[in-house]
Image (cartoon, rainbow, N blue to C red):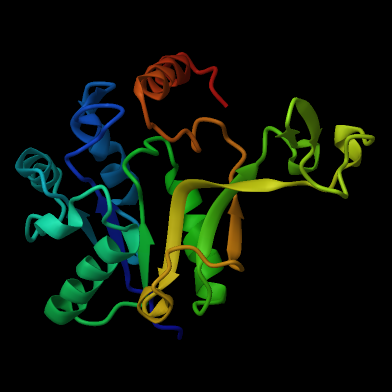
Length: 238
């Protein structure tokens, strides 16, 4: 019998936000934004713990009340604009394995993607279980195909790529995707060995739902989230 995976879910929630003040604790549908990501990970068998890494005491209290692990406030050097997600992830990973034993992987859930589904997380875990040596990253179809991209040369607009697809119909172009920021699942030593949070080659989880891949960065995104939630409650969101 295969031994069950032990996955640590990490939700990074820094206090500072230049474009939308206090966004991680801003109320969406009556609950703080961070709680949407916490709830999406709760109850999944493979997730041994959910850890919130934050420098904000209020976010820490919200997260503790939601029933997840907040063992410390993030060190000051990991709460700046220049701190990388790799540094934050390694800080949490190293602490967790020292205190709670080894894990198989780290699941990074950004709180700015509130509508990711439990089903998508479970699909990512299934992909990871089949090949636990390779990261799993969620991607979505691009809205604008890269072979239709343009650039400026002086006053002239020219194709960005020499081998462009401007003479092709959209249905004739090879499907193109972009990383959507909703789900990142790493083997336990991947971040330590590469010091990078995104590989060139990784296993892909394709998410086509527009709501699931919404990434809240500014007030316009937040307004869109509220509209999507309203439509979802009416039963019309796909």
